[in-house]
Amino acid sequence: MMKLHFAPNSRAGRILWLLEELELPYELNRMDFHPKDLKSDEHRSRHPLGRVPVLDDGDVRIFESGAIVDYILERHKNGGLKPAVDSPFFPEYLQWFHYCEGMVMPPVNTIIVHTLILPPDRRDATVLGQAQRLLTKALAPVEEALTGREYLIGDFSAADVMLGHAVFMSNRLGCVTDEMLNLKGYVERISARPAFDKAINT
Image 1 (cartoon, rainbow, N blue to C red):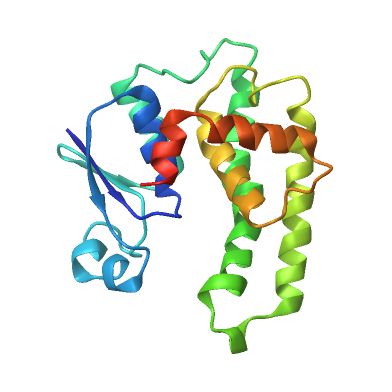
Image 2 (tube, rainbow, N blue to C red; image 1 turned 180 degrees about the vertical axis):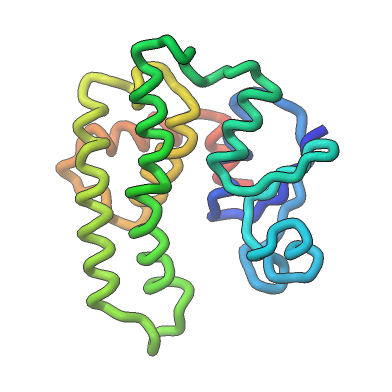
């Protein structure tokens, strides 16, 4: 059985969401999102930087959320939640799957550092403002792509697990503006999925 090393309010939520969507059996090692757990010698033996998610599957240990999603789909679901390579939606699926970490998460990380992680005297309002504007700008193409669609490529896919989770977090951070009606509706649809609800509230 797969074992997911998990902390709430982290990228590990994507993997828990995926496992729930696919109804795959798993064991959960729930840790606090705090250095006492994540930077412990025990967890650093799993991930050299002391981060989550980490997935154990028999003799396999893998970290990096996008890699874990691909691994689970290929090893345990025969490509489920992923269009076939010859599908017209495959290139778009790849684009949004990787757009998440390439364009959306870097400013999200900066915002979290300058609002939650750093002590108040080390936070930089200028850096924070730049990251907030950059995040809203990065979300604009996603807003456009969702026009007339419930999910990124039409049907729900693993691209939604990756980017949808990031959009949900961006909305929590106040960077999905009221004018972004497609994204607001998208967040509502994601939030209504039972598997997502379980992942985000575990």
